[in-house]
Length: 345
Image (cartoon, rainbow, N blue to C red; front, side, top):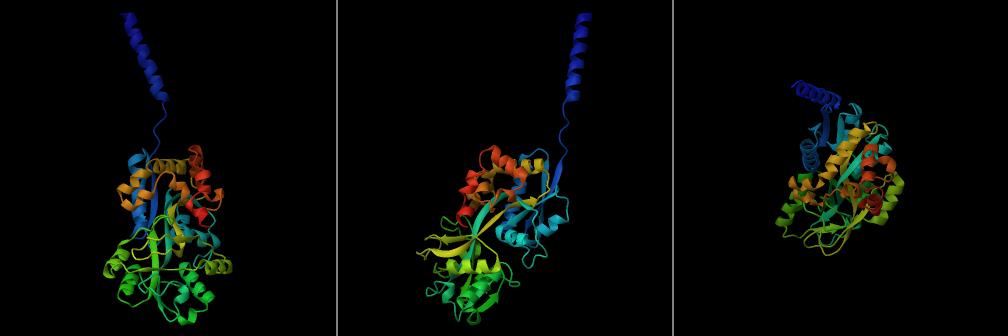
């Protein structure tokens, strides 16, 4: 009997020592996600945050709606780098790194975690006689509101390079207003903003679909001439990707047309903790297939496209924590080197 008692006491002691040596579970990490304005930006940000919350044991995300994604690097700079990540697009990223107006300085500590969704910025019209911005003398073009910075600066410089700037009326309109103005004949040409791979027919968006329905599908692509854009980029020191919308991107358009590229993605500050960013990268990449459960057009997002869509020109622009994971699974550098972004440069 004594032997049994001693055995039980010994087993309890061993169990206590083993349990006592077991590592404590990690503390919950609360991360603020700067999500952008309502629309695709916030949709991507909330989808990402929900995926992490449901699939990671201790990282908990909360999404903050912001005025615009262009404010995110400045907002992040004022926060603990281990408590904030943010939605970013490639155009804002490029201009922020260069310190171009309206950025007050060069933001060189932005690091990418993932490329979420590619897209395009171009032009469309309801006039079949307008095939290019070069055909817009005497026409009215609807562009985004605000000063001549970023995309608006590129538009202005394109018209100047074409020699028709003084012959074109630029009307600054909100996104919805722009489409209504085209539908009602108030403007002749407006921006085309679309998400989706630019090497496949472009995906529609609700406002475009509304105008297509009103005009029996008779909307046509307008070339943003690449030869002119290359001169503009050389002049202003700002370079974006160039792409061609494939036939079928618009119902009645049977020709390809030239436009520029855009990538939406996930970024953080350079000094964010490497292991934290590794965990975030691993969780969202392994669960990439779940994005389409939130928004069907995100079916194009896969674990591989997180790297294929990465809008960077060198490894140094990717956070070391994200890079560690991508190298572990064999995605880097091959998927990036053969991905959409570098192909469009």
